[in-house]
Length: 113
Length: 116
Image (cartoon, rainbow over all chains, first blue to last red; front, side):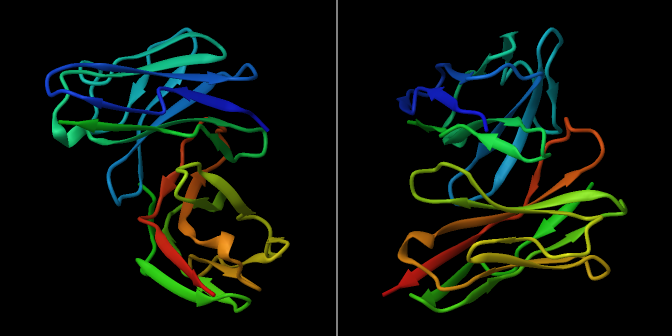
């Protein structure tokens, strides 16, 4: 299994600012996923981040709003840009395992005022 | 795109009793994976059980078992001898095969309450 940490665990931000969320994995992985979980809702995939290439974004998510970096095989960042209250969510990163399942980080709870 | 439907927003079970959470999905694929994840108030997503579509035998993990009906596209989770620690949101999820890079499609979740 993979151990995944995220920073920060939670934050309260002002409208119009940006927040960068870090995801660290204890092993090298080719692919990482970023999900958003809005209050009381399910998880929605934002993008897939491959090391050495541009992230692939799902419909409804754009790079200008959610830029992603993947500088190496154990680390990724997701930035939530120009935030509005609608961005208040839990953001989770995950990595696939060799058994087709996914391991998730503990999540970052973001509140935008 | 595959869709996952959980028709029970909330369920309640008494401690030591058995409860079944429902999940249906829509797909045109023949080979895929299904999962149940648990999310307690700590927010950590925890894998409960997984099922490969090519396997006819239902998966079992201790007190957790599934009823996988491939033709009906149904994947229910049975929790036996429920414990207070089972209280959480439960998400059913679908994953395509064979590309291991495919992400998960989640249902909306079922909130399980366990009463003493």
